[in-house]
Image 1 (cartoon, rainbow, N blue to C red):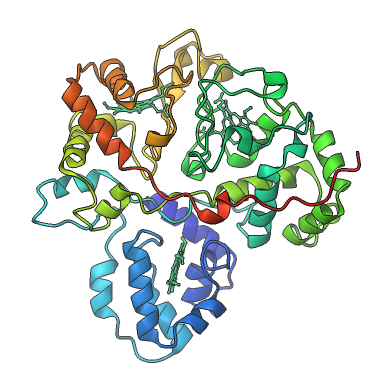
Image 2 (cartoon, rainbow, N blue to C red):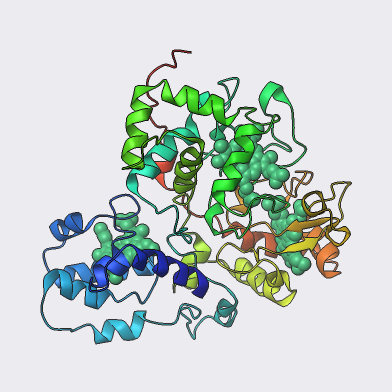
Amino acid sequence: MKKLLLALSVFLVSGATAEAGTWETTCAGCHNGVVAPSKETLLKKFKTKREFMAAVRKAVQSGKMPRGLGFGRAAMELYGGAKKFSSFHKVSAVKSSSVATSSSDPYAKYKKFFTPLPALPPIPADNTLTPEKVRLGKMLYYDPRLSRSKLISCNTCHNLSIGGDDNQKTSLGDHWRTGGRNAPTTLNSGFLRVQFWDGRAPTLEEQAKGPLQAHVEMNSTPKIVVRRLKAIPEYVKLFKKAFPGEKDPVNFENVVKAIASFERTLNTPNSPFQRYLLGDSNALTKEQKEGMKLFVKYGCIACHSGPVFSDGQFHKFKWNNDLGRYRVTKNPKDKYMFRTPQLLNVAITAPYFHDGSVNSLEEAVKIMAQKELGKKLSNEEAKKIADFLRSLTGEVPLEARVLPQLPGNNPE
Ligand code: HEC
Ligand code: HEC
Ligand code: HEC
């Protein structure tokens, strides 16, 4: 979490001058009119500093915004006046690693093992997040004309209306061929340290180059993609807007930059568990709290840690003849090693494991306990943990789910 916030503030600060205020350095990056309302919109909506701070508090409590960013200072810059926010600071400016605890909830002590989901993942310095890129990236994500057959889009296998995956064992791609692996969700994927089950892509940008070209997925080439996009005048305009000042903005690098930017907005805040972490002790059932306790006690948390429940590391999971990480590194030590997948929204992304071979979440939990921790769970324990995992289902941003209007017909 600290690392994420650091990366986030580095990104936010890098776009501002040295004497710029808190708003410019800390808030404006997210409050750009896409991720969150712009300064103008906020000033129109909240007439006084008081109303503004009340809204800040609400947004922080609901997990839409990280804590302790210097809201009071920003409010003073926007509304002027003396600093009167010390009482608020005491409540909200807690360290990012600690979360609200309540004495009436005996399970509250387990909260410290978890990290609330920040509003945004780290943004790389060479691909700043702008509304124009997100808008273009969304269209590209949904556009089947990027595939050779013009039938398959990213959304075919990562359907944002059903959890960011396809609920298939293994995905069907070009000519209905299958790649032998289960499609993970694109939701919250910006928080993963490496992409793919075997971690073969370091970033979302590099990741997106894979499916576009894989013959079992979209079976396209950079040349086809660029040629088709250049033939659609509306797209040329949108690329110019998203990559201002570039001579030839319709190129393959920019295609994947735009798609990655869109993916970084596909985060799912406001799950019952997120609300619980942020202070609503009634957001989980007793069963789910029991499950949370077992998740910590039995050591699931050793690998499924951080804001999306993945340590980003590789662990041995010998399951079938898929050699996992070894296929990338050819290092014998990496045989059967797989990157820990995230667990957010896991209730709606069945079937499970890299080959999609397990349908029931309870069953997946039992297999994990057995293979990764050498523990045999009772049915009751597995059910409690699965119930806890069901509390990790958040809200997919509506804007991402509404189908975009795709421009013009391809004259090809
Ligand atoms: C990591 C991204 C991020 C950062 C950084 C951030 N915000 Fe936010 N903020 C959000 C999101 C997301 C919302 C919720 C927007 C929504 O759903 O209406 C929000 C909501 C708000 C709201 C309430 C808006 C409303 O309509 O209710 C205010 C006020 C606000 N932020 C002020 C600030 C200030 C001041 C700063 C800087 C000190 C800041 N924010 C930094 C993401 C961020
Ligand atoms: C034919 C189905 C299919 C299509 C089309 C497809 N994907 Fe995937 N996607 C998969 C499968 C299967 C995997 C896992 C492959 C692996 O790990 O070896 C995957 C993995 C990913 C991941 C990694 C997530 C993680 O947890 O590691 C991301 C991100 C992703 N795809 C985004 C995209 C984008 C963006 C597009 C469009 C440019 C796209 N996918 C098109 C099936 C598909
Ligand atoms: C040593 C690290 C480690 C531990 C401990 C661990 N896991 Fe996992 N978990 C993984 C890895 C790696 C995978 C991916 C396996 C694969 O290749 O399909 C995984 C996959 C899963 C999946 C399937 C996710 C999906 O989308 O397919 C679930 C559910 C899960 N783990 C839950 C748990 C639970 C519950 C525990 C504790 C009982 C636990 N894990 C303990 C590393 C671990």
